[in-house]
Image (cartoon, rainbow, N blue to C red; front, side):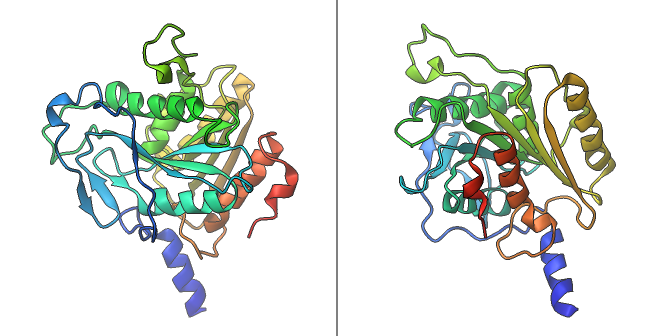
Length: 293
């Protein structure tokens, strides 16, 4: 019983706890090699690192976790960690899941986006003008390099935790097909995700659903705050009413920030497997790849 209690506690820790850094962390790729628009005056500032949490982000990037070519299933997910828009929780809401996806044939890209509520930074960023520009740029980059990374260009999704979940849903709500006449080849690619995954996202009251949006996978905890635990049930109904396929998982024994921690044996700890099953049901993966451990 003590062991089970300890495992449950591990699965219920807040987002500040985090998982460890990977032994061989892949190099991050800047979204804009010459600097992000709107961040010119802060471009030379270093990120602030506290364990697996990062703040003071002025050079947004993606860290790729790419499966071996013979194991790649053609799927890609851009992962947006949470942190209240004041930091990025890159452990249990980023790198740990990137490793899991890579090991299951999925190309994962951990997004470092600019933070609209970073109190230690004197930069003035907003969610819609800067963080969302980063999220959409990440989708475009992955799609523009799909062939190089063994990805199907119509099998690219976005996933977000907490504050990052806001970015994921906003990306699904509003996208564009790209600019055919853009001088930047990346900007020619579409910013529309092919699927969306929301893991205890915030600001559910701002989410709207319209016909034609990508299908969505939702996971949260019964013990989360009301606007998330009940908000996700309401959001599911919005998807239902719009005729957009949705999968909803509300885990009874967790609250906010459970993320993904290897070795956790609770039901909530196995949500990546449910996500993988949903990808099969939604036609993005073949059934045989779900023999996961």
